[in-house]
Image (cartoon, rainbow, N blue to C red; front, side):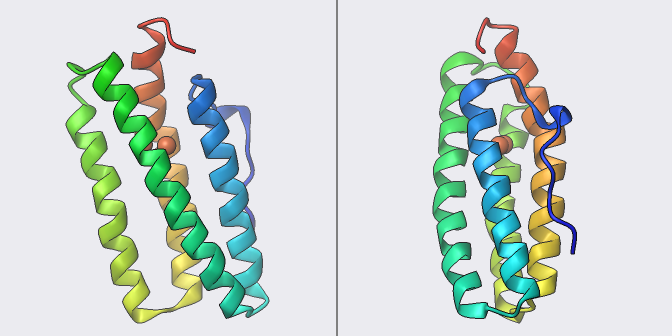
Length: 130
Ligand SMILES: [Fe+2]
Ligand SMILES: [Fe+2]
């Protein structure tokens, strides 16, 4: 399975958020490699690390939105998408198919970064944040 590639298109223009995203993509790529090589114990360990990091990343974004753009109309939908991530993840965890898991991670993160996170980045930049 192809790994995720960081391109300029992935930049949301907020340095802290972009740093987080780069690291998240690295973690997902590691999980892809482990899933391909069938190293399930290692994959589970990295999955746990990803969960921890994703939770803190969501908190950082939500705090930024709350403090800088509290009136932004897309804020509630964005937070809901973060919440739904855990619901999807829990469902996938139950049927424990590593291929399905990595496919979900790839598609959810790319879609979220290129969609909601970029929109959030624009709203934050409009307030002078970089
Ligand atoms: Fe994000
Ligand atoms: Fe987000």
